[in-house]
Every structure is written in C-alpha cells, then in structure tokens.
Length: 443
Ligand SMILES: *[C@@H]1O[C@H](CO)[C@@H](O)[C@H](O)[C@H]1NC(C)=O
Ligand SMILES: *[C@@H]1O[C@H](CO)[C@@H](O)[C@H](O)[C@H]1NC(C)=O
Ligand SMILES: *[C@@H]1O[C@H](CO)[C@@H](O)[C@H](O)[C@H]1NC(C)=O
Ligand SMILES: *[C@@H]1O[C@H](CO)[C@@H](O)[C@H](O)[C@H]1NC(C)=O
Ligand SMILES: *[C@@H]1O[C@H](CO)[C@@H](O)[C@H](O)[C@H]1NC(C)=O
Ligand SMILES: *[C@@H]1O[C@H](CO)[C@@H](O)[C@H](O)[C@H]1NC(C)=O
Image (cartoon, rainbow, N blue to C red; front, side, top):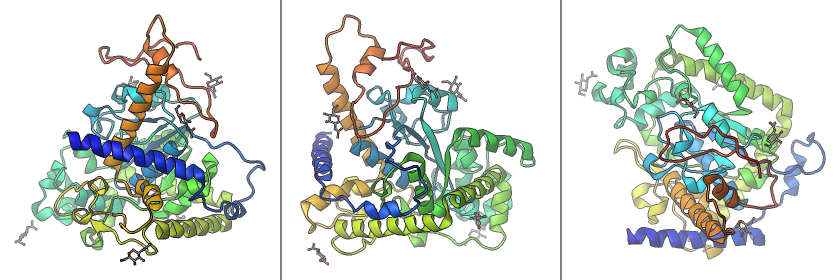
C-alpha cells in the first residue's frame, strides 16, 4: 500500500500547485466575451451559488458533470460530501441514501455528487437549506442500450440473456428480469430508481408516473438532458451564477464507437414500453428543458454554447500539445490514475493520457479535467481528510468534544463565494442507527 500513499502525496502536491497556478492567472480565459451571451440577467455580479446536490444518474454523461463539480469545489475550497470507505466510491448504492454513508471528514458539505439512490429527507437534513438540486436524464432507448452493454457482466437480469442479445431480452423481459435482485435497477426504469421512485410500479400506472414527475419537479431546480449537454450547462451556469470557466469540461467515461450498438427498428418502442416511467419522465423534462431554453432565449443560448466550445478547444490545445486528443483504451494510458474503470471485456471505456512534452504547468492544470471518477473521489477524500485533521489539531481546547462542535470548527472559510447559513448539524454516530433529532444551536 506504500505506493498508493506516494501517489496520493504526489497528486496532492500537483493539486496545490495547480490551484496556485490557477489563481496566478496562467490559465484564466477571457471572460468578457462570455458576458455578451444572455445578458438579460440582473445587473451587477451575483455571488456564485455553491450549495448543490447533483443526483448522478447512470450512463447519462453524469461523470463529466461530477468532474465539473469536483473542480469547482477544489477551486473554491468547498466541502464535498464523500462516501465512507465501506460504501465504495458510491453512497452504498443501491441502498437509499443516508447520512451514515457520508465520511465524517466531509461533513457540513456544500456539494454532493457521487452516485446514490435519492432520499430527499436525508439530503435535506445533511445539506444547507439554500441547496439547489440538479440531475440529468437521457433518452431512454439509447440509455437502455448503454446500460445493457455496460452492465452485461454485472447485472443478473442481463447475464441470463442468451448471446447477450438486447433483442432477446426485450422480446421477453420478464423471463430474465427479477425485480427483487440487488442489481435489478439497471434493467428497468433506472432513472426512476435513482431518483428514489418505484421502478416496478405497474406499467399501465400513468398516475404513478404523473405524481412522481410532480415530486421530482418540486425538488429539482434543473433537470439537465444528456442529448443537449452543452445547453444544459448554460442553464446550469445561469441558475448558479457561474462563469464560463466553471462549466468547461473534457468528456469522460465514454465507450469506443465499436462498443456501441445501433438499435434495430422496433427496439426503441419496446425499450420505452419496458421502461415506461423513465420514458414519461424523460419526455416531461425534455419538454420543460426546452421551455427553459426558450425563456433564456435560444439565440443567446446558442451564442454561449459557441463560446463554451471555443474555450474548450483552447483548453484542449493547451492540454494536449496543440492537437485535439484521441481518446485511448485504458491499457494504453500510462498514468494508472487516469485509467477509467472497465466494466467488462465487452466494453472499452476510453480515457486520456497527458502528452509528456507539454509544459509542467499545462500538465498540472489539465490533469483534473481527465481524472476518472474513482481516482478523483479518492484524491478528494484524502485532501479533505488532511484539511479536516489540520483544523482539528488547530482548534482551541474545548471541555466537551461533541461531534457538532467538532464539525463546526472544521467548516472551511473563504470569501470568494457566497456561503449561506449552514444547515442544522446531522448527528452522526456509527453506534446509533438513527439520526439525531436535536437541532443544535447555529453558530
Ligand atoms: C430516507 O431518509 C430518512 C431520514 O434519514 C429515513 O427516515 C427514511 O427511512 C429514508 N428512506 C428510505 C426509503 O430509506
Ligand atoms: C445464440 O448464438 C448461436 C450461435 O451464433 C445461435 O445458434 C443461437 O440461435 C443463438 N441463440 C439465440 C437465443 O439467439
Ligand atoms: C426534446 O424536445 C425537443 C423540443 O420539443 C424535441 O425537438 C426533441 O426531439 C426532443 N428530444 C428527444 C431526444 O426526444
Ligand atoms: C509534442 O509532441 C507531439 C507529437 O510528437 C507534437 O505534435 C507536438 O507539437 C509536441 N508539442 C510540443 C508543445 O512540443
Ligand atoms: C482554503 O482553505 C484553507 C484552510 O481553511 C485556507 O488556508 C486557504 O487560504 C483557502 N484557500 C482559498 C482559495 O480560499
Ligand atoms: C435557512 O437557514 C437559516 C439559518 O438557519 C435561516 O435564517 C433562514 O431563514 C433559512 N432559510 C430558509 C429559506 O429556510
């Protein structure tokens, strides 16, 4: 395990240096151009909104979105709630989210984004009360094809299908699907399940889908749509008063073209029928998404998307030595931390390597954009734990060491971004099975 420590340390140094460089202005893009975009916003710069829940759904470009949020958190010294080790890099998915899954060193969070099954009550207790809720949906047919391929080895419902044939599964789904199996959520209404809903509600139950959509709409300020990822980011930036720089990204966790299958005629309809709640959800939020774009003005959205893509191209050039990078199979990526997780030998999830001949500055800046989710989660947990310990050591001596006080002293301070009152503390003790019902005094 020693080498892992070394890698951690090296990466921590890299993070620190890149943060410093960043603030040193080596890589600040010209923001002026961006302000010509959608200009009907209230005049005067608003503070950036920080407190955010991003419900990371499966196979929806959500890893790219998570990377955007991780980088935002690091740049602004924010706390990201991360899972305890026993949960892996997800919050004990597919169990319903509980604050007991949150690592103690990451409490009083501003952001939470790792995979979970949504539980509104538990999140509202954990997060500050001005938290904005965001998620992302993908068109159900292409999403199901992606899930079927990605989880072909992991999901029992898919493993039973002869020859791994999507057609065979859809011809008789109930022959292969067992609703009670632990991994069955990948095989039916995954989006609904991730959002905390009932994936196995009767196919004909339109009323259930309608009620569920209404619940989701009440909680989530923005439902992004994978097919319109850049437009989604423009809506996000307006919702949170973020800059262009805050939504820059390099696409992550993709499959090679050869692992993608074209859907034969008739399959999309079968997929929608089998995943009818997801289909209803998608259609509803795709429609409201386009209403939101219209409200902002389609012209100005298009303009901001163009500015985003130009900035992205500059980023890619500075990061990949003057050329657009070719995504590579994991085995060819030299830096092990940059190799994405491979779900099976049937799917190639591609990643990137940094060219060795670019400047050190560029390397340090670029690393985080292409860091896969598991590596990044590990590194963030490590740096937040270091910071947690440091503030624990520096805190004034107290007579009673209650957890609440402990948490309060570790709240990071910063002036760049707006911070609202913290949410009531969550009493978290591994011994007790229930959350503290007491409302401690606000600091
Ligand atoms: C959601 O969280 C609340 C509060 O922690 C808990 O009481 C409830 O049982 C959870 N819901 C599910 C479905 O686990
Ligand atoms: C599976 O593949 C084999 C060989 O290609 C073929 O003979 C068989 O009919 C296939 N089975 C199904 C259920 O498609
Ligand atoms: C989403 O909604 C828009 C506007 O109604 C429509 O043009 C588009 O086809 C929809 N996208 C999908 C993938 O259904
Ligand atoms: C790095 O090497 C590549 C390929 O050898 C070359 O195309 C590129 O111009 C080099 N970049 C720099 C900054 O030297
Ligand atoms: C981040 O937090 C640390 C520790 O609280 C502090 O020393 C540092 O100045 C902060 N950096 C920024 C950019 O706010
Ligand atoms: C949020 O919490 C703060 C402090 O606890 C309180 O003053 C404020 O009114 C709350 N805001 C809302 C919208 O509940």
